[in-house]
Image (cartoon, rainbow, N blue to C red):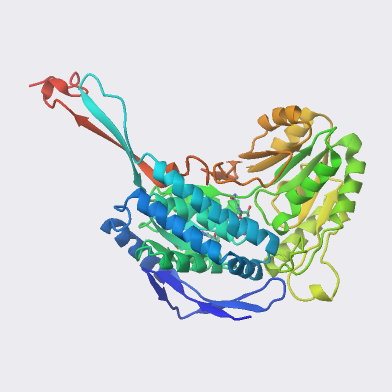
Length: 499
Ligand code: NAD
């Protein structure tokens, strides 16, 4: 397998740095690529390039149609090399090839295509009602915010990047992208594609590097107008603080601890299968995963037995093998963090009825592996039930009534996703009572460009995708035009008497 060396992308040029580092497969520890390591000086250069491009009007003064057509061109180019990019993504972050193709790349293409149509129809300038009694005409313009910093995580890098840079670019902004240090290849591959599609220099810039200093410096940079972030809640809070001095616009997609309620009377084959999908898809490294499984107390043992029996059939192994269900976790650090949660859970009285450690076997000697794990025997007050583990782990919590299930579900600092399995009428009533940005009824991981992705409470601020996504990347400017100027016809003539 060839090993490519990647550089930073600043002002339309590929830029080398004194330092570079290796990306190794979390499954095999084989070298996947070498990547230039950016520093704060590269952030300065990238922000300066983005600001020059913004101020020159080279991008914002193009028509929405031309910008949308470029997004469509990018979607087509991504589609043409989707298999290659999916395999690279799998080698880089260990997500299974089933999911990198369909979800990481496929949904990114769908998002670009949807946004192109949406942007062509977007009301960049709207005339409102006449302003009486002046008389005046009122216009609302939606103008680009300016320079957008996009800071993204490693778990679903394509989609979390496209969710930000596509609406930002569609609306005429310029962008500095900071990919995650563990999975920077997606951002750099996207830069290649946008470059090939003819995006003017400086409109998209990519600076790799660590969260600190690079991400932090970018989030606080006075040349940045908006920060769009996906990642952990702890870093999201620090970004809010760092962006406060210059009152940046901020959107945050943060962590979750999704409650997944199986109603009494739900079809258990469907609910259990779906709950496994909810918890273990993308190796459990999904912010919207269903990681707290709420079951009727009297059916707890039966459901746990069936869940364990079914989850034990998951194939853990080579993420490039299409038969694999669960691949490695991203890094040794993340593996240690998950194992530490297993120790915490045991100390809290939880029992692992499936997994609870590192799988055994020669194929797991290299790389960072965690067994699909099911915990029972604790309540919602424990750390294993409250904190985001971000691995293939689910905790089963019994409930006594629907009211009790809703109470447990909502008893969380997070509010990203939730789900309900059961008859549609009851499930929808329960769905309406859940404090979550996304509720899946008889399904999970439903992500569609037309619907907003994001959370209540400490799961975030703002939404990605959906019908209002361009509002998040534009400022509303009200322009009033007095049609009969003169002292008698001012809006508030009454406040100052006409001379
Ligand atoms: P993370 O917060 O550690 O890192 C995310 C990004 O922020 C990386 O690019 C990192 O370099 C950067 N960063 C780190 N410290 C920074 C700082 N002080 N200032 C600015 N940037 C900084 O998150 P992670 O561990 O890489 O990703 C997993 C987290 O992302 C989980 O909590 C998960 O729930 C969340 N996530 C949320 C969504 C969502 O849409 N809600 C989607 C995917 C992942």
